[in-house]
Length: 130
Image (cartoon, rainbow, N blue to C red):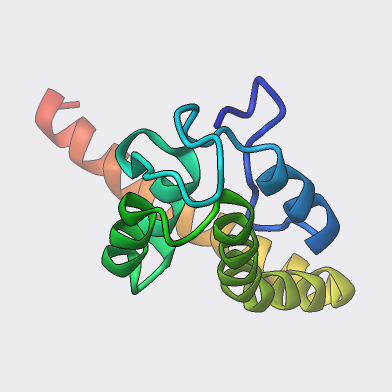
């Protein structure tokens, strides 16, 4: 998936957008019917299962055996990704709502960056004997 193609999945996705993106994912072109044996190693949906599904080995065997179809596989991926993204989305919403808190985080980060940059410049000047 690629951001430039508009088919990437962001950690801030809403469920309806996530669902549409997963529904449009490329699957095994040789798995025509639900019970056809699949080839998970070339399937984008399975690649996501490998990353996010703790039981991806079982999913791989189900796909190879033809005991699960691509539609069900995509629905289960949707559930798994939705559960993964939910806490991140909730935290993001909470941070955005609290503008003062967000500004404080930015100020703290700025101050830390300044301190690190100042220390780096001291080391650079010392190394260059300035």
